Image (cartoon, rainbow, N blue to C red; front, side, top):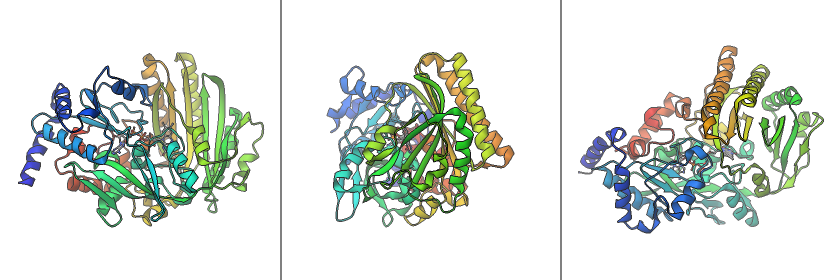
Length: 499
Ligand SMILES: Cc1cc2nc3c(=O)[nH]c(=O)nc-3n(C[C@H](O)[C@H](O)[C@H](O)COP(=O)(O)OP(=O)(O)OC[C@H]3O[C@@H](n4cnc5c(N)ncnc54)[C@H](O)[C@@H]3O)c2cc1C
């Protein structure tokens, strides 16, 4: 009987993409009759407008029919049950939002449907017996660090204080601690998940291990995660900050980055991002090095080749706690944003090509863009050590074992104030990463992997994990969500059914 219900629901859901959107308000009416009625808000109401205003990317403030803000996993479960029950006669589309930082319209919000905003699920607690921190999905990393530091504990979380926990951990998660303890998702010991049938399950190394693995990189394809239990380690101050140099130093920085990235004896405490950047607020073309050493050691030797670059413009490095370092990376913007990503081998010529294309983008924007805008292009070393750290902890789906050499994971980050410039910025962002990809392919330095948390909507990070991982994720989705709720009713984000 249960199987028959799933088949009937699956048949209804397959019609969803063709369904008319006016069902959104009917679905909200069903929610308003349920036990979460007090958590539902509508256009014009304060809770609804505040939720929309808090999206990181201005383009992502869509128009849901209603927003529901549950406070507990049980309420999330109730919402999923109402949505799926209502969908057997009239499909209800919905979106899930934790921190709301993904700058892809529709990934974390929906027009004419229900947005489940986990805003009030934002606490962090620590269990001294297990050594695990239990973190709710809409906590921001700054608040996590502020909760754990007084207890002498730390987790491998986001580098920016304002970034949400929920999406970050499901996409992989790169922290300053990654060279030491691996990717953030691999530091999750247990996920509490609301499945498509509304049941609340715990996925870890021993229980539902396939779901546990798939959630680490598989994003919103399997359920709504309502709690992340993360491994902790001793909290110590870090030495770090951002040093800004004139653009003329870019080649010196790239040469140092190549040596840093290829060093087989790289110090695992040494995290680094090399940026190129330009902003209308301070219109000088610059190179930045973000040094983050996870021990309280001033100017450690690990960065000595970078320290040989002289004439810096500013320097914020000092010994400080993670909560303070993350504040420097935090950014709440009211602007419009595009992230894109591409990966390539650690190779000077390919790095130099990124700089050539970056210059073209800046020149074009200086001639054509209006209002306030900013371009940052980030170069980070993706380390093969992440693979060993992952396998020891139950594995993930990123397909990292294919890579035997460290590589560069590149992110372009464009932000602008004027909606009329959307096409200009979006097209130039595409030109930039496509250009790098094309150069890398011809130079033999291309790397397939696309980091989901930096990918744009036309990119396909799930496929980039490899065919075996795609097959695995499809099997896990079919097992835990046989009626395809998280594929068809939750249209946003990167979908395994489309990989
Ligand atoms: C200023 C800034 C700094 C950043 N720094 C870093 C960094 O240091 N390292 C790094 O790796 N990335 C970084 N990122 C990228 C970041 O990891 C992604 O934007 C990530 O998606 C943010 O998580 P969120 O909860 O805010 O996202 P949201 O936009 O809320 O969600 C992202 C996606 O995940 C889904 N989702 C969210 N929560 C859940 C849940 N509980 N259950 C199921 N699905 C869910 C959503 O539906 C959506 O598709 C940064 C981004 C910004 C804007």
